[in-house]
Image 1 (cartoon, rainbow, N blue to C red):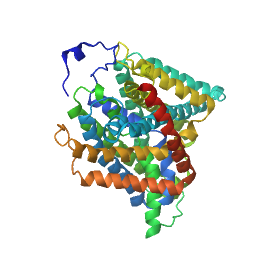
Image 2 (cartoon, rainbow, N blue to C red):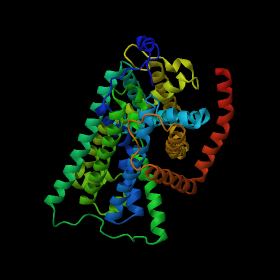
Image 3 (cartoon, rainbow, N blue to C red):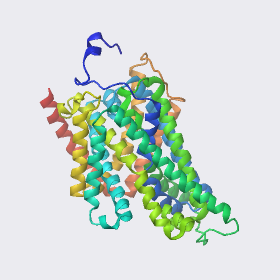
Image 4 (tube, one colour):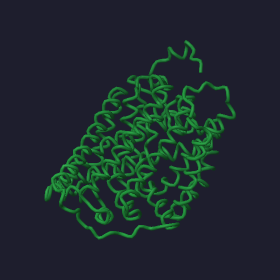
Length: 450
């Protein structure tokens, strides 16, 4: 893409984001978006379905491989279309405005809802630590969203620092729990883990079905690995740093997930993990005794701010890009002097606050979950479309092993969608209804834009 002198002279207040982000921000926003409530709650379901240490840990490896193959494909798209906005950008380019419209609005609304959901869990942890705040959970959550917005709207440098610091604190807090679990096991080598009654391990087709069901929670725990793609137009060297950030964030998260689950196995039996809705709390109770519950609430309070920051930033970039293309209000595409899409950020936080006040974020997330992987499938299809349509376009990064690796992750996405459809037909039907309603909305918006 050729940049003219006139384009360079346009000030930051005229729809120009600053190219100032590097690979460490990309890793931080990936880790911040991925590691959240999923890893704290998913181990119970995985242990219940796959009651064998090898299968239990193997499910997390398979989920990580799926995400790495997906990152391999999406890295190519993000480097040939280095524009902030997430998957909306290249799905729109490859498959047309309507497909982009669906992906963009789903991504934006689900990101705003995720901000609300994480803020609620964060505020519940704070209220557990400070009992006098027990009746103010929504107020605390609203304050958290407001504080995050005030920090992020100040500029891209502040956003970079906020994401790096909150992700580093999260990783450190989890590592403390991991080390404590392994240290407890080293000091109690002769003591068996609690709850030693074994569960039956499925076989044959039952094992395949159990693995598919367990992977739903695992893949949800990895969701957010596309983090740096939302900021492609703000990365200093997208051809080099986007692939590195995607790989770095995913490998870091995969290692942390394996360590966390291995730490749980060090102090708990698989039946105990399966019976605990919050395995971290059960493990902490074994290691720290009566202080375990308090320490886990502190862990949650320290770990979740990075997810609030990541989802708020991601949401703002999606609606910003759609505003540029007039698939959202044009004022969403304004950029302040500090290089931040301030109005898009404020709009995203306002919607997150509305979800908090109405309590509708859980239902919205349930609806959008089906469309999460559908968006991935459309992105993987976009690799094939752009390879065929634009064979001569310079590709700073080419997906390794394409078309086989891209086809594998595309088929995996379709299989996941099928499993989700079987597991939650009502949610899938609501998502399908939303798609039907969306087309008239799309026609109205594009007619007004034209």
